[in-house]
Amino acid sequence: MTGRSDTEPVVVRVDRDRCIGSGMCALSAPESLALGADGLAAPLAEFADGGAELTDELADAVDLCPVEALTLHSARGGYRIDPAE
Ligand code: SF4
Image (cartoon, rainbow, N blue to C red; front, side):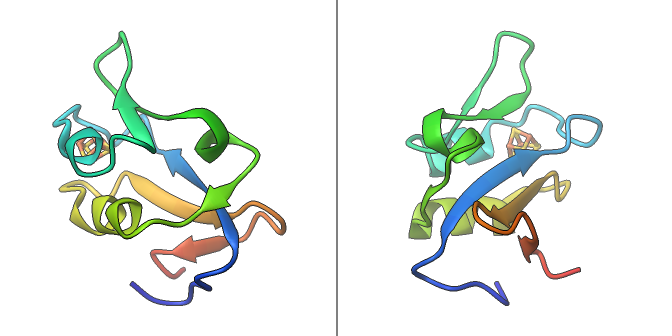
């Protein structure tokens, strides 16, 4: 993982066109992501909009998604933190 600040609040976005519903992210970071009724991943609570402290589990989930459907963004500036553009 590159380009992130450990103190910056983050939101996580799911590219629903890429997500295959493997559930790996929900298992890795259940405080941040869950599978919705449609079988695709969705961010939970503050990770969807307001921003929250990045956890190791969420960082791992982003890195481990098999189809690179997850991206981390700054909750303040909106720019992408990981994966780097
Ligand atoms: S790990 Fe990736 S493909 Fe699997 S449910 Fe999460 S976002 Fe979707």
